[in-house]
Structure formats: structure tokens, C-alpha cells
Length: 317
Image (cartoon, rainbow, N blue to C red; front, side, top):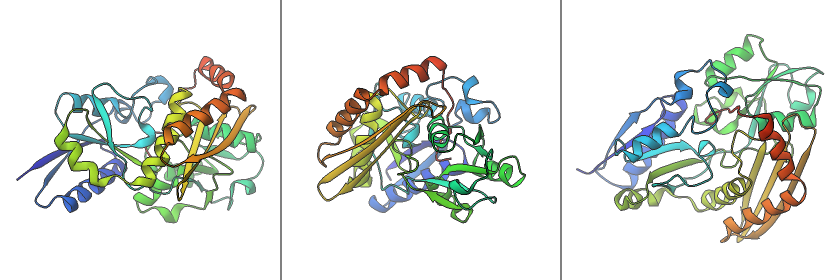
């Protein structure tokens, strides 16, 4: 019997995502034995420590990537938005399966929508991208960092520590907590992180067996959209720890990409969109990145990096 070992973080959401990929593999490969290996990432081992004190790179991915490189596991399942947009030496993004809802979710018992929050309301999020867009729309809001898994964040909300939370809709859906969502933030209001809602299946670059095994799991629309979003982030040298939002949509043979770059205080923002042939997603990402740079994105990101923006939400939370 052929077997394969999937590496994943140990959170409830990460395990659900790994189990979902395992089920797809079993469906496509009769008789395949799939083992799931839990691996603790540094950020998971210190859930109460602010991300800014843990470092800036690979907090949710490096331990899994190391396990891949040593052969301890055969593939890793990541939340795609946690993965670096730049290739990791010796590894490759083998497949992007069908994408969940990429939108942001507004969760609150105080208001039905972001616009209905009272002046000075406390909103919990650890992502600079969300903070920037929130303050651009509502400079009166008090944005406070929040960590922990979805249940922990919801508990803190219900205890009154926050008036509202911004969470990834995908994580709530996957955990069966969609009923916690008060409303969705339209992408015209807040753009998600590039790759949000999608999973990235990572393997060793030269492992033909695993690449062939996971190839049927790739979804065309998700792959094209996420490729454009990730290429834009790569050109801008951004990730989920700097205020960059990107979302692509596919309509027939046309791919449309929209992106935003902002200072974390929301004082400066550039936003643009561009369409192009669906079979050229990387080129579309590069072209839109160039347009944003012309509009001042490089200066904004230089200022953000100089200020040391290092917070992160981690996974689909």
C-alpha cells in the first residue's frame, strides 16, 4: 500500500485543513494510506506573546518547511497567505486546491456592520493590512492587537474586551463557526491578504511522486487568482506582515486583480485594479505592482518597514 505523510500545524483549523487535503488525496488515489503529522511552529508554542517579539519571517511555515527538507514529511499544508510569495529553496508550491471565501468577516454583538460601530469602538486584529484599511475608513476606531485561535478570539469578544473583530471568513467557515459572522466586508471596503481563503500544498521540488499525487487537487481558478496576487506581493516584497491587500477574480478568459498598499495608520493609501489574459497571471501581478509603485507604493512600504511593522494574524484568523 502506498503511503504519504502530511505535515501541519497543530491548531484545530490547521488540522481540519490537513484532513480535508487527506480526504481529497484518498478520493483520487484508491488505497492510499495518509498519515498526518502535527508539527509545532514557534508562534504556536507562544500564543500569548505578541508576534512582533517573535521575529518577522517563517513564524507559521519554517518548521514545516524544515520537516519537508529533511524528509520527515512528504508534503505540508499551509494557509496560503502564510507562505512567502518568494520561492523557498528546494521546495515548490505543488498545488492550490479550490478556494474558500476570501473575504473578511465582521464579528460583533454591538453593531451589524463596520459603519455602524460607535466612535472610538475597540476592534481586534493583529494584521497591519486590516489595521491600515480600518483606520483609512474609520480613523476614530481603536485598533488593538489580538492573538489566539478563533475560539479564543470569540471568547475575548464576548467577554467585552473588544467591540468587534475582523477575521477571515474562510477560517470561520472551515471550523463550522459561520454563524458567528455578523456581516461580510465587501472587497471594495477591505481587500484581504493575497491568497486568503486558499490552501498551499508544498512539496520538495524534485519529488515527482508527490507532485504527481497532488496534481489532481489543483483548482484552475484558485491557482490563476492566487498566482497573480502572490506575484504582486513578491514584486512589492510584501507579505502578511505589511499593509498590502490583493484579490483577483476570474471571468472566462479575463483575470482582474485589485490591490491596495497603505501605511499602518491609514493616512496614506494607493489602490488600483487591472485586467488581463487569464493565462498570464504573473504578468498581471507585475503590471499592477508597477502601477502601484508609480503611485507611491514603494515610498509607503519603505516607511512601513522602517517603522518595523511585524505583526501577523497567522492562518485564516
